Figure 1 (cartoon, protein in one colour):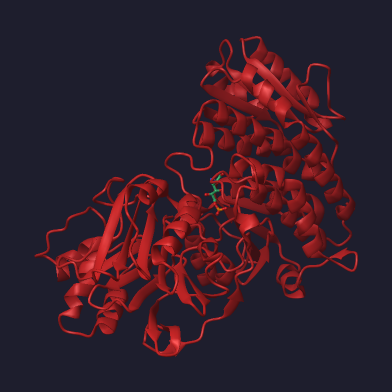
Figure 2 (figure 1 turned 90 degrees about the horizontal axis):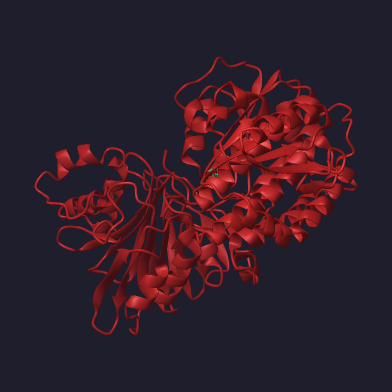
Length: 599
Ligand code: M6R
């Protein structure tokens, strides 16, 4: 959560930082701010406020020569989103200015021990860090003062630090929260996300936990150095910035979410291209060995990724016959069930940075388990820290509501189940190809779905009902509708409704039923009659082989284990169009952030 960008180089720093912050705004958008060095006056200027980056861009003047600065876009943890709590924050004398992504768990203890006399301006833990650096800088050179500060911080941080007495050095520190160092001959950009480096850096380096970073201008040009906690310099791994502007702009769509919904067939095809070698699915032998003869699989994830995990359970149990359990990461971290020893943990995460999941990873690694992360971000913390990882190849997902990553996760889980099975009874290449075609067919009918939405979903609460594998789709469909339209929605096992919740059904309450399986068709349709009898406004999503004349959306037939990746698409479109008609901020819904890096 929160996005940070810092720059030292030949380009105008405010241009680099503001355009970087715009690209990172999906990480947090309560408030934002920037501090930069005005070379004409020699002063550092700080602009910040509640609200979006556009406001920061349009309300202040950047007509100065400037080549050095830091910026931040915030998702509030400590203190309300307002001007005072916005980053950057300065130390009491104003000497040190910092932006911070993460949460410092021991900030109260640090105040009591080192800073009892300081009166803080904001409610943030970040201001404590700026003051600690100032405290140590009284007795030590700046490098050491920062390293001493980093050594006593508990929690997560990606920090960019300016010493206003030295406009030629940008300092940084990193633990748990992501931070990348982008490099090009004409300057260095530090950012919490690869997207901010597009157009500014040709290469990037992933900064390891507990690293102290120094970026400076030397006679030979711009250079950076990275030090481990005991002060030993190390050389990080170099990667190419291989994203282009097309992948991170809206490509003519009004919202990222709609663009990403429409990209789903191509995501399936891209995954196939990346995982098929010589006409067969290929997964690294080390991963196959890691799973060989295991008695149980455990899937850990949060939100939409957890819903993909439920589909993963169906895939593993049906295709590999390995019993599989799915746990909510935030629950598992602090309330562990009795575990099978001969097991592997699969962690599913679009961002690869979800803090709840990372807490689980640390724990299960301590317990000696092998772990596999399935993620869309190959440089992410969860990819690097798990025993192995599989990349989703969905391309950057920018809308806060996850769509293409979800179907990508299901595709990867199906490939993994397939390669682990002795004699899989599914022609997965054929079935995934069919899935992509069926996805295209329903996406092409999106205007029809918009019309349906206009005439339904009039009440401000809603139910999705389904059985078996459709129930998992209902959970995901409900999450999608509520997170972007703010309509209270529940995903319900259709048969369970009558055990209490049916009390909420009254005239015009929308109930959307999903029926993709023959063996539950009759039962779910009985449940539809029950809610209709109580006045519900029912919409039915079915498939060619389950359809009846009354159905509203009919999908092409695909393999039943892959049906959640298809049936979810009309529900994503329902959520999108309802939110559109209600005038919601679709790509950046209130209170949310794309990457949830706090527990
Ligand atoms: O990056 P992750 O997949 O680990 O994120 C997990 C959830 O925070 C995420 O899926 C969230 O539920 C989405 N906003 C749903 O659209």
